[in-house]
Length: 396
Image 1 (cartoon, rainbow, N blue to C red):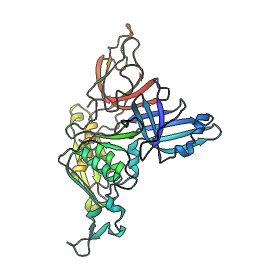
Image 2: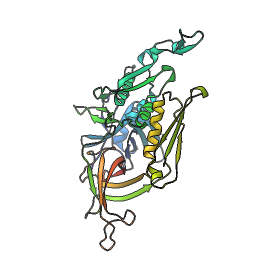
Image 3: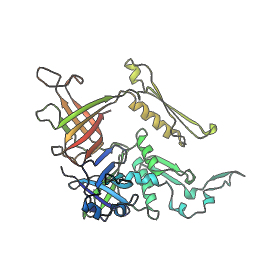
Image 4: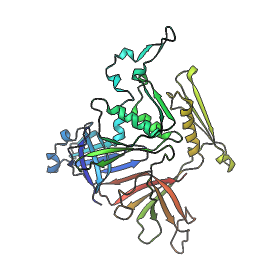
């Protein structure tokens, strides 16, 4: 499958120009992370030189994108140039639109003009005390998690130069609440990631697409709902592994028990008088005869709500109740299901016969034949477009 690589303006999504890339160029996507695109440009190619990449592909200003037909596989800001003069190769490193919000904060537009001494103000209810100024706080309640994420992004767009081309879903009311003070300077990209990681938190994806006139790029902010937090197609994509001329090759299975957890702990708080401790217990492993396993997450020092911290420990024991097996394989891009039909997060089904060396079917490690229901966690490919690397995990 021939892939199209092109650039566009980050702020507007317009000014598309095609780029010829070397076959060493790659793309990859993962659940709840920005996609990654790394391309090599041959600076001995007159057409590439004519584009003046140092100017027209400026880091921080330009988007790099890759498309299969009318479906954009990945698109996001170019963050780095690396030029090798001896080899005459320019390497561009880009990440998906999520990465842009790693450089924004959860702050209302009022923070752009308020006196910086006013982020903290006197507390009228306690003489000599201070409190955060609510004028620069962000307080959201009565919404679903996904709509809270939407409001954070919309708030960032209100700033001068912040109106990158994002398309939003309709609001969803709910029971969720998130409150941040301006003086906390919460990183927007980080809090989006944290929201997706808590128990019951939604998948979040900035899905790139062409504008209706096909002359620009925009990103749809997609989020899972509170009722169904996973982003997944209604289609279950199937790859048979034992049929003649199977589209599947290079299957690798990796099992890793280092995240087993029957008891999950988490701590938060910046000082002894504000410390929070959370514990989650899951008896699945011990009921099966496993020894007890514990895990501690102390990476959320700024969390101030017990329910939020409990969400992290709940997630740890949910995923820690079994040994995760990652299955990775290559699928032919030009055979059904085609590249562009499926995304990370979609469900798939892999079929394998029982191991029978006499008949030459099955596998000596997987051994029992079965139809395996799995979820796609990552996708990858290169400029050749012949195969797609697919990584999956068992459906929990």
